Image (cartoon, rainbow, N blue to C red; front, side, top):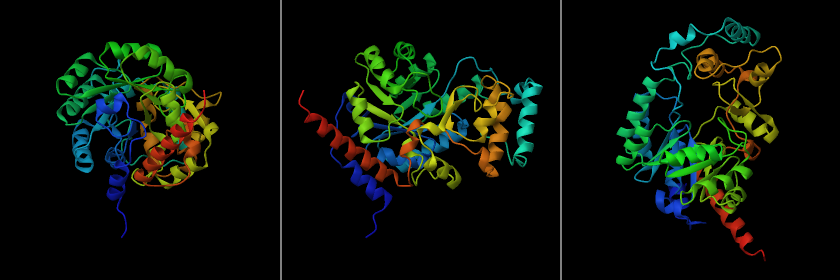
Length: 378
């Protein structure tokens, strides 16, 4: 009889835990593996396997967040699930994209127009993911309310931790995780009420800081005291998980490892690029959103790093400058410019598999690695 994805996830969830840390008890998970993804099916599958899936909702409208978290709960069942928002300070007050578009420099608009022409990009079919709404205090307040109204047990804050939002989450029984790229960030997150910290090293995908994972994790652990820390940045195998635990973390925060899963459903052209890439094929650019952003190298990153290219604008101006073009690139499959956020662990992306298969291998490799380490004579 063919085993379904749900059957396999149940089998993986029943595997003996390779490590039972305080973090597992606090977050009611069997395995100390947390996963971030923009895919509801991926997050649900991770949570069903005994980890904790965290849905990236920062570019979703408040109504979409409500609907997608409801669907996530339906797919995950009664196991713990989480949601992530990015709430940077200093954003415009109102959701008024036109006001930002009017301020865009002519040189930058001309550069974007030249990219349309050079790569023969057809006009956008619709507003891009970054231009559907303006990252603003107005939208952030509505997103936060949608999260507060949900039944997710965990809320992760990527950039920014508004005090009132944290307090309201805690009153509703939700635990707060803060992503940190430096010990300074960790101290601020602790002062703001974080229940756990993610020490996100330079190896990570998307928004990443300058400190490498191996250097960052033990520093954040020292700052954290009794607050559990998750190691993030390049975690792709059980050896990485064991290393994170050895550095003092109580679990791991993963992202890139799930991009090639069946549940994620990455576009075949994007998957082809990731499978072909090595760790030195990723670059950090501000051309995506205005903040540092690690992605697989492409003509997009090459164009923005050229000597005659304009300097990317600050968030949310860069969002509004390139958002429609980015959407058109993906919608029309303009392959040279297609790219994806991915960490330096991309070297381990080799084929498409189910979430349960990836999760099972991660658990088994972690167990084998930790057992081997326990046999080393000091």
